[in-house]
Length: 319
Image 1 (cartoon, one colour):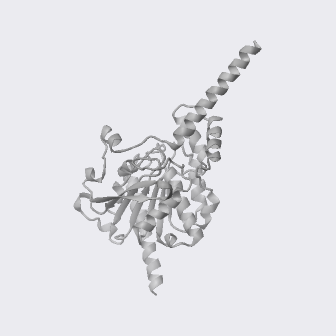
Image 2: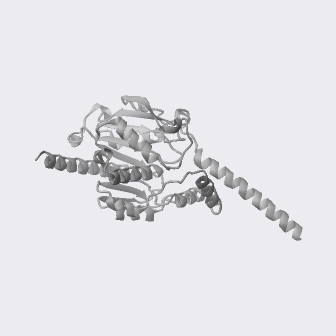
């Protein structure tokens, strides 16, 4: 009997080690959403499939990482300029996708922004999509990639649009820019966060639960492995948002099991200029599409708020 218990313990330990190793590997090697992936699902593979003018280039980063970028011309929806966006002719929307997604996924989110902004910029995070030279770092240090992208793009002003891990990266980039009083801080006009989370560990557990898989202690062990490798998955501590004084729109599905609604509420409560929209019947990835008309109007109003704020700031500078 004791022998069987020992064998069972050994087998359980080996199984735990195997599952932990698999989870740790998958965390930094997410599924690659590329043109082939999109084509197989009948989705647009690039902006050309949406009849949009664009340029494609690469952002080279330290360590050999190369991040592909689409720079898309806005205000071209059906070839008609939206007169409601007359004051937003220089606004550049930068989209930051979430874990396991890519810029091809961001293509499905740009429609409400097309008539409102001058340009839209979509790029692949490390270890995602068509990026090369680096595994995912789970948001750790990837706010620096975003800030480098903004510096490469020029004078802005920028509207950051992030989903899930991308929202966390955008929030960290904005708060660090403010804390360092950098030129980038002056160029970020606003931020839209879809399904953000405060704690990566909690979001990882939620993702596993959604897929019917066990979480703890596998998640604890996998995170320990990455910490020993020097990778610290990024979260956002609400208290650091108290110094964020740009308009923030948080859009969160009430039924989100990956990023808890409570996290969105804590983020919105902490930031001075934040508005929270709770979307009924929406989960983690569909808060923009469950009520498309309401969502589009929310985006229009938010962009109008950015433009009005920019006009006031410009008037004060010129006075």
